[in-house]
Each structure stands twice: as structure tokens, then as C-alpha cells.
Image (cartoon, rainbow, N blue to C red; front, side, top):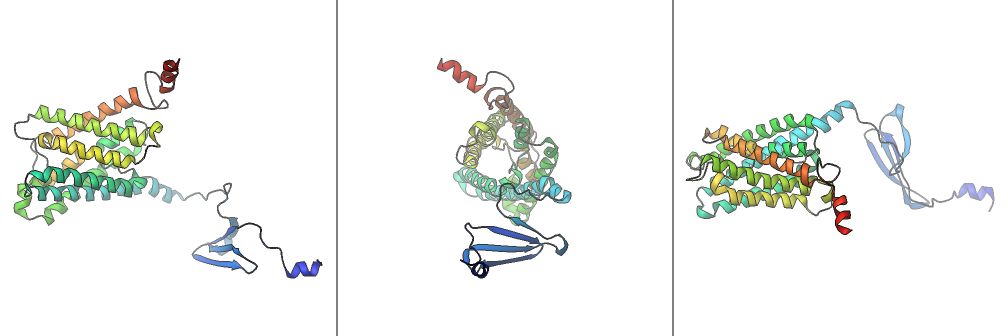
Length: 313
């Protein structure tokens, strides 16, 4: 073949490549006339700083984000997600509680299932953004487990409490005043005949159950491949409310208790839903770090791998 023929018919590409000509606010895709499998994409960024790079290459350096973008995505956006998620979460719970006040004996099951389903949905939706803690005790437990930045702890709790108050006042606007009064605006109450100490113990145990499920299924590296951790966590919420609801209200969440109390003005035994869940979270975080965490996080006792080697010999 002559050089003239080669010039008229350039060699076709042997593999598919995707190029990006970076220049902001313009995206155009076209096809090579000699090879329909080759697509070149021109992305306009700025006339003065245009470059040609290959998309999808493992060794291509990522463009560093501007400090304001990093601040927003790392700190501000997660707090916004916690606020929005908690607003919707408490609004849904208080609405179903208002319905339950007129529904008869089946109300508790409806409350527990609705709470579990809504929590599962929010875990899927905002989990990638903030982790979907939606609970100061969860934030505390994950921080003590070594899987959360302590700097974000207080902003998370503030966002959760603010969201709970917002959701509770939305409920007060929506629900008729007579029904709102009957259901205490979704605020918790200690069951008939149950002492404050008994209610606190109930909250300690059901919260410890919830936090341990979260740490073992959603945080621990040894169980990171387990299927559907959000489902296990949501089911733990359902179990905790179903079991603890008649006795302590089944809160497991101080922020969830605080918002409806502010909106309704019902503060009876309110300390129960702070003392109990916080103690339960501390218990589970301690059990996890001392006894059950993977070897990279366990504080004391033998590692699992060492125990397996000992028993096998």
C-alpha cells in the first residue's frame, strides 16, 4: 500500500477510547467516520485551560475539589441530610401515633412497622450522604466504635434535634387539635403502673439491642459483606418499639422524644428517654469495643483469629 493511500485512509482504532476535552458547560458527542465504536466527547471548561485527557484511566489524577466544595460535602451537607431526614422521620412517626390514638389495640404494631419502614427508607436514601444516624445515641455509639469523626458529633446532634422539633410542629399543624391532644402530639409516656426506674431499664436494654445491631451489621469490618444491613437495623427498630412501647414508649432516641415534647408541652418523665438510651448506647459501644469488634478495633481480650487458631489446634 502506498503512502498516498495510507494518508487517504488513516488506520482505524483498535480499541474503544473515550476522550474528554475539558472546557466548561459544553457537552458534545460525535462518532469517528471510520469506526462507529469510537466516541469522542468534548467537554468545554475554559478556553484558556483546555486539556485532552482520557476518561476511565486508573492512573488519571482526580481534579482536587475547591475548599468550599470540600467543606460543603464533608460537613455542611451531612448535617443538612440529618436535619431533613429527622424532620421527615419524626413527622411520619407522630402522624401514625395520632392515627393510633383512634385505631384501637392494633396501633402499636402500626407505629412500629411504620417507624421501621420509614427508617429503612431513610437509611437507603440519605445513608450515602450522612450515614442516616437520625439519633444522637447512634452518633455516640458509632463515634465510640471509632467509625465516625468526633468533630461532626455535636453538629449532627444539633441537626437531629432541630429536625425533630420541626417535624413535631408540622404534625401539630396537620393533626386536628382534639386528636393531637389525645395522642400527646406523639410525645412518649410511661406505661400504666410502670415505674420510672423500670422504664429507664427498658430503654437501656432495647437501645443496647439496637446499637449492637448497628455496630455489628453496619460498622464492623468483619461483617461488612453481610447483606442488607439497613434491613437488620430497621427490623431492630420494629422489635424495640413493639416490645418496649407499652412500658417505656420504645423511644431508643432522645431527639425523637425531645421534638414532640417541645411541640406538645408534655414533659412528664422526659428524662427517661435521655438517660435510658444514652446508657444503652454506652453499654453496646463498650461491649463492641471490648469483646466483639474486629481485631483492628478491639480494645481488650484476644483477637478472633488467635482464638480460632487456638481452638483448631
